[in-house]
Image (cartoon, rainbow, N blue to C red; front, side, top):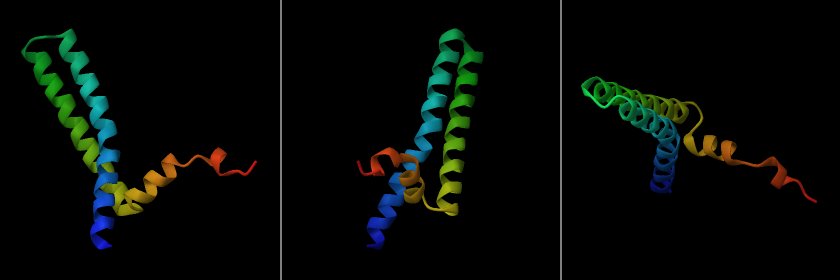
Length: 85
């Protein structure tokens, strides 16, 4: 079961890290679309790297604090569905 737990934690880390990465991709694309020269390219790369670093740091911090599976379960839970009619 240790292998399954490790795989689930890795999937949780990827899910947590992907949010800032997607946001940075959109911002970098907007910057490069607005300014299509060397400076725009450099700014886009910096934005992308900042998003990747932020995502990795955030996912690592959540993993160490409480576990990514617990975090994702808490984020995706819906208390309205838990109530009985």
